[in-house]
Image (cartoon, rainbow, N blue to C red; front, side):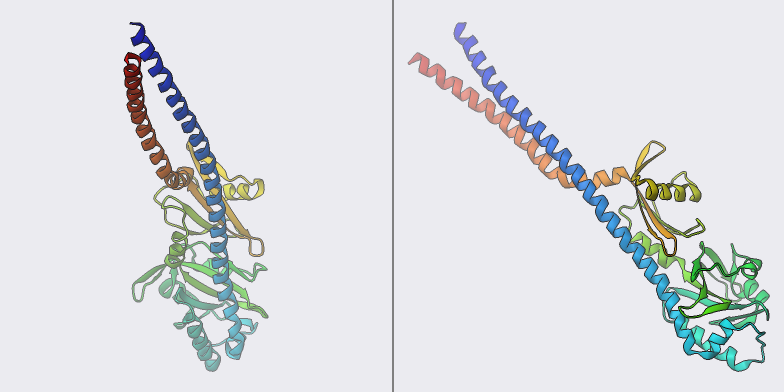
Length: 338
């Protein structure tokens, strides 16, 4: 009986040492993994912030390219006269009109994502576009009918003391050929050297811009949006989630992120990462909202392999401990009887 108790005590003692070693190793690995998980998430946030800045630069470069491309209009004296003139421009001013249409067509072909371009001459009730000329009524009712911007919107639009202004997307319909596209209007108020007296409007292809945003999402659940100085959401990526926030609330949240350096928010009990980058020259800003669970999932997946290997190691150590302890006790028992 005494020998059996000694065997059990020895077995328990050795097994407890193994368990303590395993528990200590597990706690160490848990703390190490938690630390590196936080580091990895922080690095992911920094990398995504850098990626978002690059996207912001890409969008701003795209807009600036369009703006600076209009500088080529000064090469065409006819088109420059059309844009800057204060006098009336009549239909019988054939040379100016023909050369202007030709210059606008060339400008239209410079970028694949330019849907259309036109000049509004309010004094003469005249539209000069890359597709020809028409009256203002005919153009906005038949050729380029905006769902969200009626004719009066364009007639009342005045110089906003900016180089250009980007407006929120709208569908435009050409009732002549039945074509319907979603576009982003950009109104040019000046070229780098000249102020326009007649508005120049460039319609960008919205799906092209949305695709550009989609390519820069951290995950399929991310939402990236661009808003202008008038606090209007101009471009928004696709997303597999829907937030119960209005555009105004999303913009306010983005501004809070800039002013208070708040990188995380809670919406309906879920935690989200918020990253905002703002161009203080144009006052356009790009904001990205990503569920924190996606960020954790991306980081945790990197650390899963060593964690799985550790648990496999624990099972192997436990089995070996039983075998070694049993073998040791057997040898000890044989030695006692010898």
